Amino acid sequence: MNAAKSATDEQKNNDGFSAEERAAMKERAAELRAEARRDAKDAKAREKGDAEVRDKIAEMPDAERSIAERLHEIVTENAPELLPKLWYGMPAYAKNGKVLCFFQSAQKFDTRYSTFGFNDVAALDDGSMWPTAYALTTLTKKDEKVLADLVKKAVG
Image 1: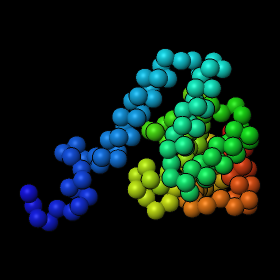
Image 2: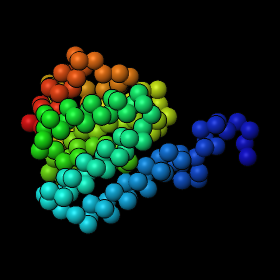
Image 3: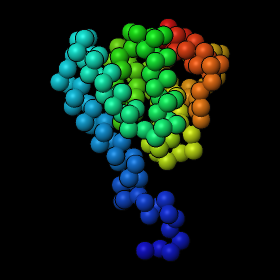
């Protein structure tokens, strides 16, 4: 083994993925198997997705859990047409089967802040450049209003 190898390199297997990345891929594979067994238009699918998201949020550390719980409320109140689901083990909300927005806990990939992000199906286009993810360390009432407006705009 080369002594110059970094700690990050040592954490990765020969496949080039960290343990956290491999765990997220395994979670996603299980999520896809579960989705294949249910119809997204079914009310039970919504209930099951909501329960899975709430269970995942309950596993988070206190500070992240309070942010994730409030974001879940913001999304479900402002975009009830979005289907709650897990995406790579993260709370996410889908439109027509595609993830529109998601919450990534800082703990998930050992980062210094949590992230609320939007995927390309979100209608957030604003000229030639616009943000698609927001770092979160806490949520103020002003932040909640901004995120609620973004979710409404993203749904289109």
